[in-house]
Length: 510
Image (cartoon, rainbow, N blue to C red; front, top):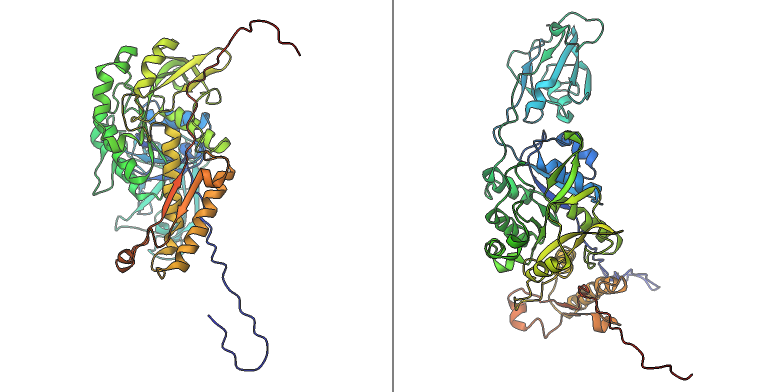
C-alpha cells in the first residue's frame, strides 16, 4: 500500500518483486490398487518404503499380488507410493473386554483373529490395557485407562492412534470389573483365561473386477484415488495368481489417469506369447482404449520370473508393471522425467528369467506396434527395452505422444503450471498481470531448459511463453479469461542407432 506522506522528509516504501516461484510437481508417485492382508479399505494411504507397506498393509502375502508388485517397485528404485486396498468379503474381528467396552480390529481380514487383549489392575475407575498381535508380534500398552467418554485417558480417545484395534461402545462399560493379575506370559496359549481373544474371521475371497473398478460416485476401487492429492503412475496388479484385469478395466483406469494427468502402466496378459502380442489379440486389446486415453498408457511384455520367498524361493511369474514403475522412479530421480525409462540404465533387479525370451527379430515385430518389450542381454541383465505409449504404433498418424517421456514431460508441465498459476485467479486482467505471468512461467521453463529438458541450443529454440493482448482479447477480458500459451520442443529418445562403416580406398597423405 502506498505511503501517505504527512511531514517533510524521506519515506521508505517496500515494493513486491512480482516473482511467484513455480515449483515442479513430483513425477513418480505410484498408485497401486489391489488386495492386501490388512489395512484401510478404499482409503488411499501414502507410503515411502516397503517397511511402511508391511506396517500398514501386512507386508508380503501370497494372497496379494499387489504386495509383490509393491515389493518389486521398491527393489527397483521406487520412492513414494499411494496404496488403495480393496477386499471381497473379508470379516472384521471383535471382542468385548472384561471392563465392558468392545474392541474391533483396525481393519478387515483374518489377521485380526490373532489379536489378544488383556485388562489388568481394574478398579478405582481406571485400568491398564495391553493389546498384542500374535501374528506380527506388535504390541500396544495403555495405562490408567478410563471408560469415560471424554478426557485424555478415555479409551475412545487413546485408541484413535492404535494400529491394531478400534473402540466399540457396548453400552455396558464397567470400570470396576477386572481379571486376576497373571504371572508369566499374559498371552500364552496355556493361559487362555487371562486374555480376551478376538473373534475368528476370514480374508474373504479373491478380489474381482467389481472391487477394483469400484464406483466413481462413492469413490471406491480405482476411484478412491480421487481422494488423494496427486499420483503420477498407476499400477493394477493381477487380482490373484490366476485372474488379472481385462482390457476393459485398464481402459477405465486409463480414462481416470487422463483426467488426473497420470500414466497407466499396463501389464500384457499373462497368456500372451510373441504371436499374441503382435497379432489380432493385441489389436483387440488396444482398441478398447479411447485414443485420447491411450496416450496416457503404456503396455509392457512379457512377465517376470522371480523367486518367491513365501514359496521357498520357487520361481513364480509376476506382472512387470510394479518393477517397471520402480525403474520410472529411479530414472526420474537420476536423469529427469524427460529421459526415457528404458535402455542399459533401466535394469530390473531380482529377475531370474523372463516368461518369454525374444530375439531381435521378434522384438522388431512388437516395437512398431507400441508394445514395450523387456529383454535380457549379456552383461547388462534384464532391461526395459521400449518406451512407447499405446498411441506409439508406427501406423498411427498421430505421433505427438508416441513416446512415454514426451507424454510424461507434458503431464509434468501441465500439472506444475496448473498448480503454480492459481494465484492468477481474480487478479486484474491487464498488462501488469500478463507481465508477471510471462516472468514466472518463463523462469520455470528456463530452469527446465538449463536441466536439459528441451531440445534447442538456446531458450528461444527450446520454449516460448506468450501472454499478452494477442492471446487475451478484449472479449476474453470481458469474459474473465486470461490465455497463456506455452510451447516447448521435447526431447525424443534415440530408438534406432545407425552406425555407418566404410572402408577407405587407400591411405590419405598427411
